[in-house]
Length: 383
Image 1 (spheres, rainbow, N blue to C red):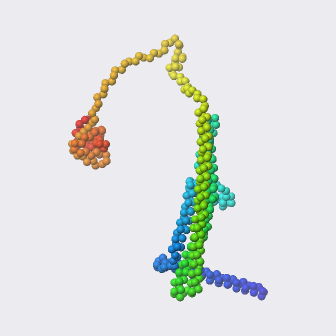
Image 2: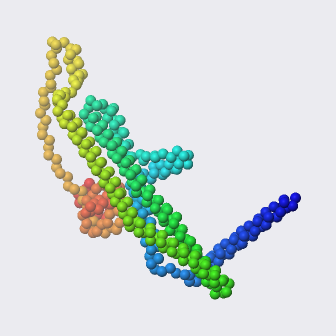
Image 3: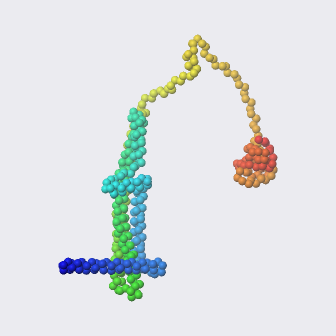
């Protein structure tokens, strides 16, 4: 019984101390958070000045952020180049995520347009038949498109494995998880340090607490500074080599594509030459049987054939007398009240197009057409 009580008492003592320590830590963390919040609000709303980093550090931040932004932008645009259809890209990304979640991750290829064209050409050419040189030429073209699709798949794989994935890994690990984390911690410790300064002035903070906050702030500042310098320097060296590799992959793709197209062109030229060497057959239309021929074939040979009637001379036509152009002369000025009406000035000569009714003509002056009152003009040549 005494042994059980002793063990129980020891357990109670340890548990109580742990609760006390955790309680003190929780209160200390809460107090620190409130202090940093107070400092932040004082700077934003009370115009209190906080500790400043030097201009070199700010410039390093700018260069680092722009470098990471440029790398990410290049990745996005290169991916757009490799896989131009955004709907298909999103569908492939969803399928890949679902496959990884099931533990059956497999490489899902992008449906290249060249392969789709090649499949259609090959299918249609087979329907025409290989006995036709045109059909053979279409098959050569279709197989060429299929080879282009294979080369495009190889380009897609090479660029993703050797350029896009390493670049994205660098952005995620070195920039987002390391540099931005250090800078976030630095800003947090800077607020704590500045708050301790204000509290020390009010004799509410010891010098040890102030020095501890200053050391932590400087530690985070150094970590962020070193991390950004390494990141920028690495991109000056490594990422340039990655850009060179990207250009190399593109060059290799175009060289292979040119070789394939030269081969296809040569094969199609052979088909064209073979087609031209074929013997030319006379193309004759099939015989037509008219109703006259049918009647003549049925009638007796002794019956006379119908004779064409003799041509009757047609007297020459009398020359037509040209009719004067219908015209009218404006007697008064007329101001159009809407776009369908025609402005008139006194003595204007108007070409008459037609009479709408007893009150309105339609006419033309210098390419302008519209309606005008009949009583504003004198008809020279009637319609």
